[in-house]
Image (cartoon, rainbow, N blue to C red):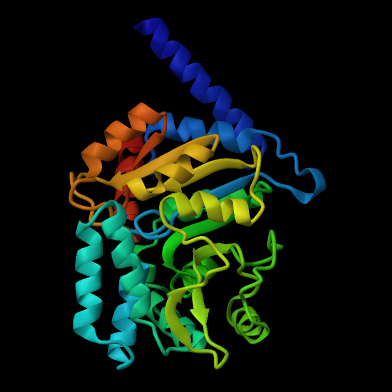
Length: 333
């Protein structure tokens, strides 16, 4: 046991030294020692971007990058503006949250029907408002997980391409992507053919180049109004469709080096990656995003069976700061 502890500490020290040399100072806060070491080793690897093909990390959004629900926040804002029916929106949220498999897919499609008749600008503006103004102390922005923001920053500064792959409408997560710095300065893998010129200009005006947000693409009629259906030219970014969307965007071969999710819906994407992280709520046996039969205990078993790294994620900035203070106090004592 003593020899095992010595080897563990030695490996830890070597990884820390290597990553410090690479500038990959990922915070230890909230990460388990084992997962932190895995991530440090990943960040320390030399990045080879032949022909501009950098390694790719794909993140789910709701319940992964942030603990909140982008669709729910968007829907609530649209209800507040009188653009969506409150009862219909609440029903979709409840039924989607407790369903599984094809039943969940059905409710995902029902959620898109809520947006029928709205313009892309309606959705983008509502998504921006739902995120929260100012310092992000309120709204969806308050649930952004600092450890995920830190990881995204380290990956991007290390030369990785970071994508968001989510079952929420792309318009619902664009503001969060901007907060994470994902759209800024990246060149899209392809130009999605289903986006009209005026819609690209709208997105570019508000969020820069953001084709690296692979969310559910809504279909728009010639007048620029949502039909309530997904765009037929792109895979539905749910379950197996997340992996299909990555294929459609040119993420082929061994380029998907890391995938991060929080539910059984994300497992197909994680299986495609060289390394996968499954997030569960810290100190809880329930997860509102994974359905009644897909709680944290089941995800822990799946992570062990599939060889994924398990992460007990924070609920947001407040919990993260508390954990950081506890870690600092422990070091001082």
